[in-house]
Image 1: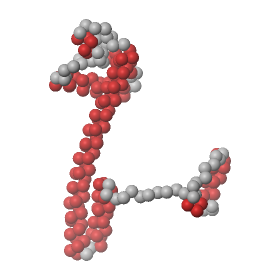
Image 2: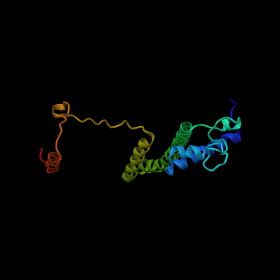
Image 3: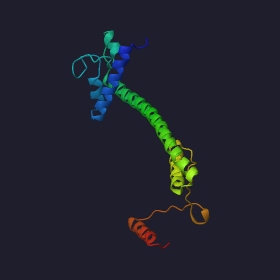
Image 4: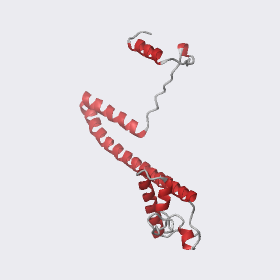
Length: 178
């Protein structure tokens, strides 16, 4: 099969966007498949959707895809479109992270100069806060390790309790008693 032309790729991208919009609107998979089918005999709008499902079959005058195939095509289009959008979002987030990092660097420079030059305690505090924020943004800080353990650092005993017993335990804990 030949590589799609630029116009075909654009039509496929539009078909995927249409599939996502229909799915978000709550349209069932088969209806999406029929709406985006290339063959007007099965297309719910009775038109040949550009680069629609079964376009190769329609171009060759063969039988259109069955309902199961239309559902598969619609699901695949939505999955592909969402995966591409996720990748675009990841790229946008990375770019935004760089911009925020650069802004924090500028702010840090001002606070650092004041802190070092004047020994200004507020500037020192501000510089430290900027460093902390930048470290979180860039993931420099080691993650805090949280460990739950039972008595004597042993395992936690899991028991089933009734709602009333659970309420009593919560009340006792909130009251400060153990």
